[in-house]
Image 1: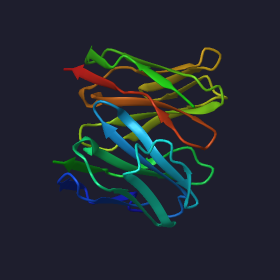
Image 2: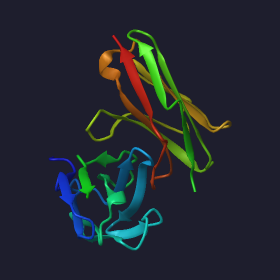
Image 3: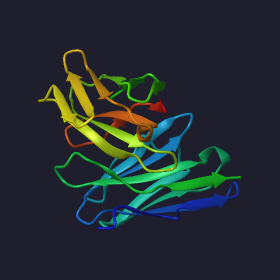
Length: 113
Length: 111
């Protein structure tokens, strides 16, 4: 298995632009988590899905952030419009039903100038 | 919701010495406590975990202990090596749901 796949690995954009981050979970994993990591705030859970349904989005910072999981093999995290304070590494993690361990993707390093 | 506190934030040890990282949690419903290691520029990776029906678990040079009454758990690394240098995160989770991470401990092993 290729593991959790994220794209792009690096994204540099200007303030005000729309950014879309993508995640492909490990086949068979039915829970998907989006995290944001910064030096100041550490590793924060933004939202998680179970069987493609959003279960908890209380960590989504504001309306500029949205996430979707249209099917079991794909999820997106969108920021519109982006701001410099959104600069961070965004991780996607997935796990199987009834399992405890989460598997992280390689992350997307986002820089908003 | 769950709140996980982790100490210390940085830790420097001499190669061969032991390192101990401590965490506390708030939600008595949490029953799964993983520890992740994150090397610079890499993803967090699970190194060991413990569930609430176990008080201690060992894997070679790494051990975790759990005190459910006091709501705290610890990571112990013995005979530290330079490759142990990384950021370590503790976490807590109720059942199979979301994991709440601690703020991380940057461990430096000095050769």
